[in-house]
Image (cartoon, rainbow, N blue to C red; front, side, top):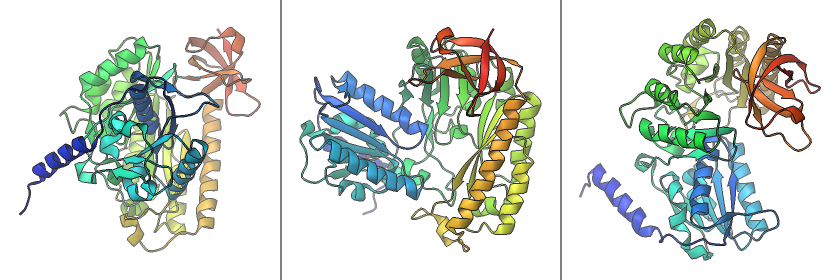
Length: 457
């Protein structure tokens, strides 16, 4: 008998509900939280932590016996997978009696591998990431770990998250999943299809963050420009609504695809009350031949046009760019073509990643594998180019006045913060307070060369 797909979804939902244990009281229990990977993971971990603390647990302090460990994993590269395994082994070794919950992308993609790690009690897939509290088994250790995951097409849940780990900057998750299926990427398999929260709920979360002392919010997601597939709204609609939350002084847009960064969004940011002139746009390759191998949804000319449009609207905007080197099929000629294109872009900083082969991806069928030595050499060239571009950007602002949001300094370090266009500034800690907006005049570089010195006005 063929079961309709909507029935399968319903059956899976019922099955998941029956498998979950009743919520327990965690009064007096110590919980530890570990996050690997992206800012979105940090935001989601913050929400899981809030749920456990609301149930009576407290965040474990150094040296305390831990009752619950929650590990939120990443699987963007082979290195990330390895780091997750190492972290889980270390956490189990350091907390042998703790009930260990593993969730996140690596748990979703390799649930059996993770459940087989001695000491792991349960692996929760993406659809149950928000249900940690209902899957603690009375904190009774299991002889062997179990996994509770669903297939990619059955990941339907949107887990709302707003990171509150830092009083100054919050991370608001507005979207999850991706429908793009680039040939090198496993994220759509780990996160499911694109989905989002309604704008009204996100505005309320932003308002709550402001009431808790947040001054700046980073809008986070897997493919945020795709916002609205669930609710029939748009990313521009979201930006306009968030801009009305007057107790938030600053918004920053996290990574947004160039083909989804519309001229309307750029123009809105240029004229808005609180959206900062700061963009992070994944290019991935400056070669059209490689972009086609990647199945990216634009050519480099589109990317260049977006950079030009931003510069026309906001000449001082910070523009960060993601680039992957060593993709299968990236010949020497393709890389040199990409390097020349990127050199000519008026951007601020490059985030350079070496291509990592991921099981099950279409990229594995592409001939011509780039050697590790070539990947390293190409990465170094792009990193050096990035350093020159960033330094030139900073130098162009020396002597200008700017407003800086003061962040929490590390012990023994000078106070620091960022301008609206994301220039790092250091100043005398005795003259500023954390979470304060201050006006400064930008001076020369600090000793390490990674920040400008600011004089309070």
